[in-house]
Image (tube, rainbow, N blue to C red; front, top):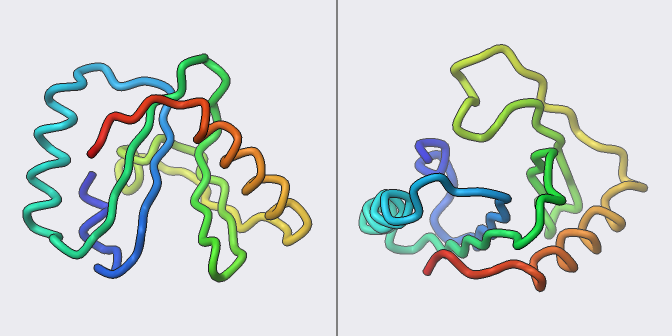
Length: 109
């Protein structure tokens, strides 16, 4: 979760994940992060089905999306590729994310 420290404060971040091994530990770490970043708006949901595999970073207001080759906690630890996706994929990706988001269970806050 260290990558959240690099994000500007006044943004909303939605994280959609397929699994959390230790939910209570995850919640504690998230609460600790939020104590440090009080202006950061963070919501995390866990999808109920095993339909998620790839990792994406979507910046809605700039209409930019990236595909990330490793898990987010692996960024900086292993060699990986972060690729900007073509503009024509952006709308479909946002639509799919919103659909999956509605299906998911809230973990945080």
